Image (cartoon, rainbow, N blue to C red; front, side, top):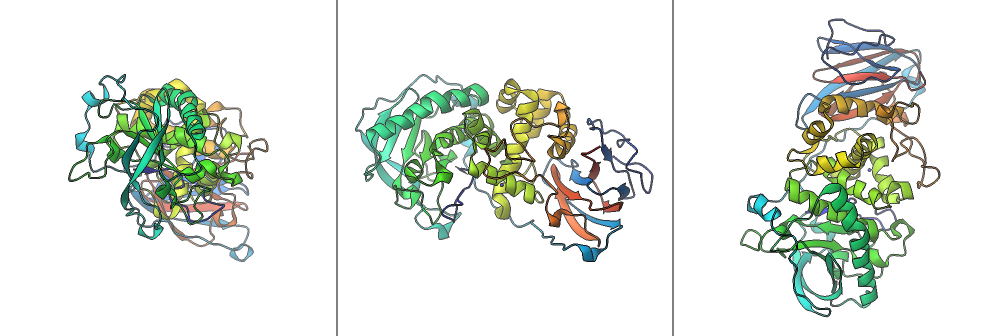
Length: 492
């Protein structure tokens, strides 16, 4: 299952983040390590290494990016970093923290073996014979008691068919007193006119399950702790795609609805909270993108890339960060504030920075969209390969080189005219022309991101990155194996 970004929130209003044989180098030398053919922006220098140690001169305001592309998994690499500069340690407070906790699986199905390409390629034109007012039973998650998370129980409820769309059927909890047939019709229209064409046009077609590609949209009260007048302040999920509905009910899969199902929080539809204003509209696109991605990749995609696609679908639907979405802004802030411990290849949701995983995915997919365009995004989404391998196949750029270019873009965007290092969709160091909840501060912008004056142990995941700022002129010393480092002078 894929809990929508923001998963189970627990706050009311904020519910929603190449090696050279030299001991040291001068950062003014623009010589990338051998074999590294990634494009290098003006003012960016690869730090040279020998025997697991790198030294380089830094100026005040320089940003040091430490990253790895040594493994196709999220393997982590320990390193130490420190600065010898003209300022002393007493001038600055240092507050480093580790963020490498146990992670847990939220969305990988145990029923993948049931899925087949012949099922996905069967006739998508079949529909179910239904009539308005029909009542039937469905399974859903009971989010009334969040203390059981992530082992959320399933319960059965009855729902009434209140709208029939071109591509969807909208069922509302039988006990609902607020959501009318007219409300259900609005939901069906939003799906038919926005979510369906955007997602199918840019990410692929929905699966054919039990003979039909139609999508059932469910609004269960228990999904919001029994409430429907607003989002449950004790925590809930805004929406959900559950991959177990893609397979028949069985002893191992007893709670399947065996159809294409999207779950929509009824309280979200009725919410008066400004942070959730019309949030149900992009949620339909987001969760539908998960469903479509499941057809092609059967829950094997990495978390940031899976969620990045779904978040990009919100933007392509006319919502999201460019239109002032607070929750999406919060995801990027979570990643910018603490990118450590997050990798583009990670297969689990990182427990202590779930929002940051979404933020990384959104930034990566937005960067690819801005640089290569919509057709490339669709080709990646429908490719037989996964994630970074699909990106490399479609763009023709080795994944480790593309990642190194993205590492630079996160700092340089807005300061260069070179499109390789520029975002268009996201203003990574600003407020989106006043549309964001607040300005995005960029990476290495906080006091705890300064290079420490004492040798400090850190670790970075493969296809992950950490950024540090230099506060004055001096030398940066990094020790570790299978990692790379850039000095980025954005004012060069």
